[in-house]
Amino acid sequence: MTKWAASLIRIANYEVESLQKRLGEISARRQDAEIRLAMLDAEGEAEMLRAQADATAGWYMVGYTQGLSVRKAEIQAQIDSIKVEESGARDALSRAFEELKKYEQVAESAKLARQKKADAIETAQMDEMGLRKTGTR
Image (tube, rainbow, N blue to C red; front, side, top):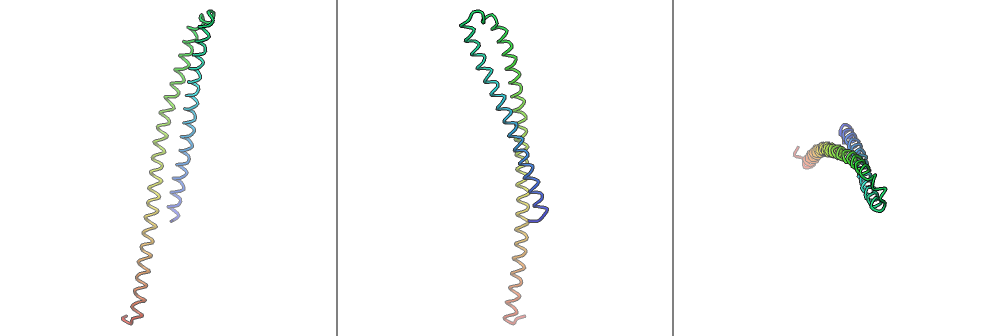
């Protein structure tokens, strides 16, 4: 493999690894937000049960449910935003993989072309040696 091809492949690998890391971080943020949303749902259900059991807690339920709805909407907006970012990161990673494959294919083609040329030279040398041995040259 030539130096330029090795360099291109190394750079493309670095790009792929960086994008994989970024995608992992984005996915972790999305999962964290989804967990927070699930916890809010569970908290809301627990508060609803408490309000049913305690009449004084019921007075605060309207304000609590409004606040809970706002907090859930904020987290859902974060999740939606993160999903868009995650989609973009997946697309970028896909393009980076394609670029890496292109560089690897070019390097492989160059290697095969060099090998073919070397084989042709070797065959020509063998033919010439054969002709010298038989004395036709």
